[in-house]
Image (tube, rainbow, N blue to C red; front, side, top):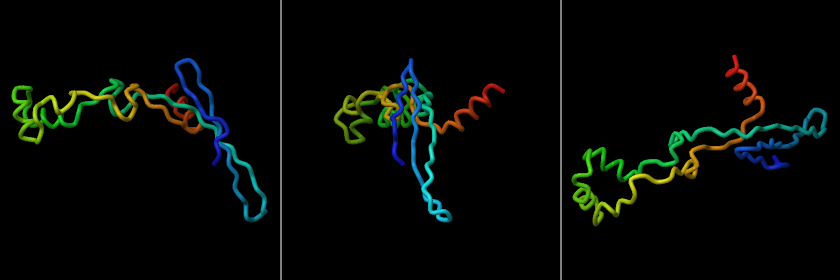
Length: 121
């Protein structure tokens, strides 16, 4: 499929994108053009729940094993680090939403309309 126009989504504007393709009907040996319309959908990031940050996996493991900051340097040395500072910050930007708190994706128009109709009813 070939994209005719890229879609953009910002806080003030929404432009629709359209993908166009064609397929060959073997029975009639004709090429039939097919258009599919999509809508940009922005929703809260499922990974960080909109907080824009996630826990550093090393710190998450540390807290799961110890439960406090008390022995951070000792735990870090036991796990191959020089000190607790080598573990990095306790929180880091979410990789799924690039620290934006929301993800954007293209949704087929019929799916968007059925979701909107279901939320109204």
